[in-house]
Each structure stands twice: as C-alpha cells, then as structure tokens.
Image (cartoon, rainbow, N blue to C red; front, side, top):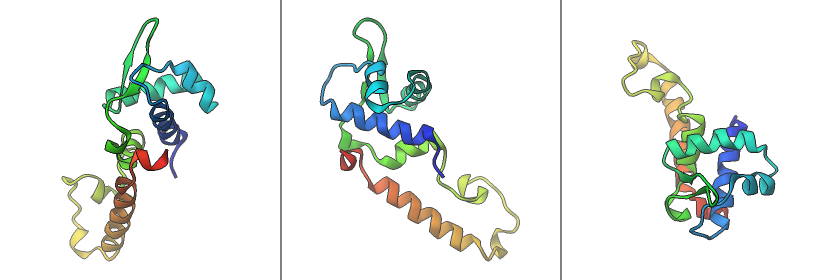
Length: 131
C-alpha cells in the first residue's frame, strides 16, 4: 500500500505541471488547491527537492517548480523516491543482498515476476499521462 507521502507527492507534481508556468509556485497555493496541510507538504517538498524532482526558491517570489517537462518524469521515479523501492522482498531490493536460499527458493520467481510487473507499470506511466 502506498502512503499519503507518495500519493501527495504525485498530486504536487501534477499541480505544478498544470500551472504551465516557469514561475515558482508558492507551496501555500498548492496546499490550498490540493486540500493538504502546508506543514506536511513542506516535508514532502523538501524530499522532492533533495531527490531532484523539483526545485525550490525562498523569498517573496519563492515556491517550487518542475525541473523538466512532465513527459520526462515517470510515475515510478516519483513513487520510488517517496516510498522506497518497489521490491516486495529483501532479496530483490538490494542486488548485493546475499540469500543462501535463493538457488532453492520456490517463491523467488513469483516475487521477481511481480516486482517486474509493478516496476514496469509505474515506470511506463509518465506524469504527463496523468494531466
């Protein structure tokens, strides 16, 4: 299940894309339009800036804006930044994870298939598809 953090991050990205402006959009405006606490959005926006999804500016004309065109973002990269890897089991989450049961694991192929389906689904969707 995806948390509000991941879902709200998508809503922020959609909101910024819908503004079709090169100006910075104040977070209070986004919070109001999306009916989300500004305090909570500050936490989310900070992570999104750190992850390179958006850029922020302080001051009178401050706010946030996208770093690139909406068609250049995948939904998968947004969700994965906010929620963590899609991998359903530890042995798929970290390529350096050493599981001594992997060669005999009867469920690993199923987990791998599920992981690929989920990852491919979200990475094939672009932010522009949601506008």
